[in-house]
Length: 160
Image (cartoon, rainbow, N blue to C red):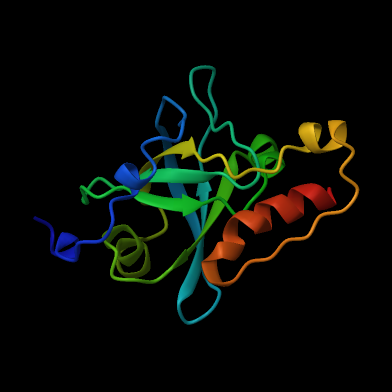
């Protein structure tokens, strides 16, 4: 067992097993790491789209993140918009440091150039087409801490 895996925490895949996911995993390379606060870093990833695989997500969804050296799968909300991905093949995650092995890996071991595998999941989304059809005129976003992460994607998408 990897040293990072000694701390047992609720398993992301078990907690979210009832939620539909993208079937294929996509390779993604870390291209930028930014310290946002003393405990939060943002990671910008590049994932080239191809005819056989790409990320297809809505604002608010999360990614299952598979790190080759860790058996525990991380679950992190996407903070960037689908438009960013379609225009640049990049997406962003904001990750708070913790003892959970995937978060700990990102904060202590991840480097620019490192590769991970990801797949989209989650049903807490902003779907612009549905909101338009329902006549939504105003929205209120309330969040605290890293609960802000899915809302960041929703707000950025809504502004555009």
